[in-house]
Length: 388
Image (cartoon, rainbow, N blue to C red; front, side, top):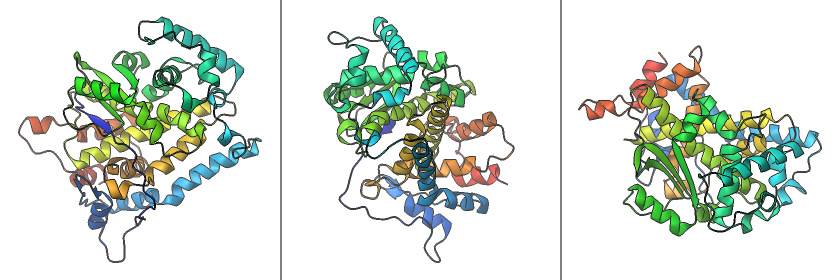
């Protein structure tokens, strides 16, 4: 495991958002503008000297309108199909059937759930609940360990997306075999007390103020742990309706699994994937979220039935880029700027294959030069070489 710790910071709401300029102010050069929007908390800001083509691509993706447009498109598509979002979907306290979309998928999910709880991979503190309880009970009234069962099932076990799991779609983004990723990670969705204990067991010695972490398995450094604080996720969700709250944690888990995929693919090239700078944080988080969102979008498309996955993932992209509290905390910078920045690089991929493009991004995250006493390439130089 080369990614030491990828931390998912807690959402910090503020009473009124301090609006951040989307584009440079008059006479503001790009490097100063980029430093301004990436500054906060422990991050001093990235003074990026980017090629003109990169600047123009980024300006298109940082605009709120580009993300609002994606949401509006999916919302209209559902409304044209007869979905009543505001008086039906957004009002449900137990929207599990919407996520599964069809009776056939509900049966598939129930079958995979039974196999999951009968396996050695899952241990219920009491009697494991019946699948119908998880499906029909008010989502926000479920205990953390029961929510963990639902989330693991829909992400890792249930082949409800045209015969595949969400993990399969993510693994395919990295051209990895699903079983390889599955075998290399343990997922734990815990209450706050158990989360804190497990984070310290993982070897993290700092203050536990975040809501999730991906890092090495303390008993086997070649494997990964993903730990999520269910209590923080429940109380700090930026979403108001239960439908999105129920989908948010699977979405976050896919993001964290994306970090596992980064490490696995990077290791196959001999890279040591690590975050050693704010520039690394920008790329690793933007890359992880870009691939996670594309995986969920493809999974939603594969259902061939009315479902909320595509709408949710567009809403999550909009919420992430324009998340309230970023200006006051500074902790959310890698996510809020990382997503539109990496998407803007994807827009310029041109003739590069997906595999070669991923390899170039992972090579930027390779910390091997530092371990050999060499100077690591800067983001400005890397971009100038990538987009000559």
